[in-house]
Length: 91
Image 1 (cartoon, helix red, strand yellow):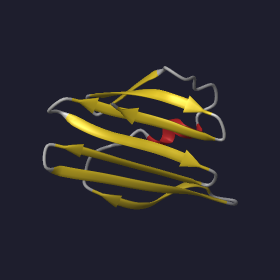
Image 2: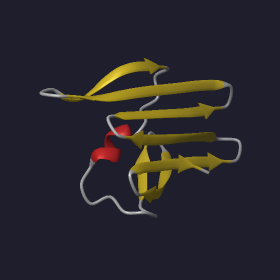
Image 3: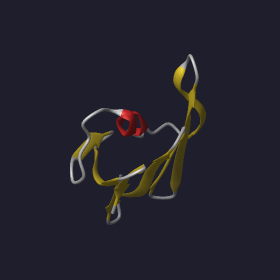
Image 4: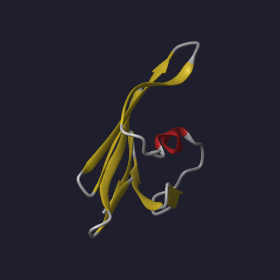
């Protein structure tokens, strides 16, 4: 997923294998999240900087489609693709 609303926010979330990482910049403030799949435990947040909620959990939801819009924290994140990795971004 990627967002890129001029003057509002810019960011991206990428999931590859057992890791998912997201970053968003709102003005001069940067927010980051990192998740990891842990056997027997499922997805767990392993790092967070800032207080924004990034829609990282959406990357492991069944049925997500390219072009789908995911709204979180007042931002719309369009999904860009899903092959072996899912990318959702603020353009």
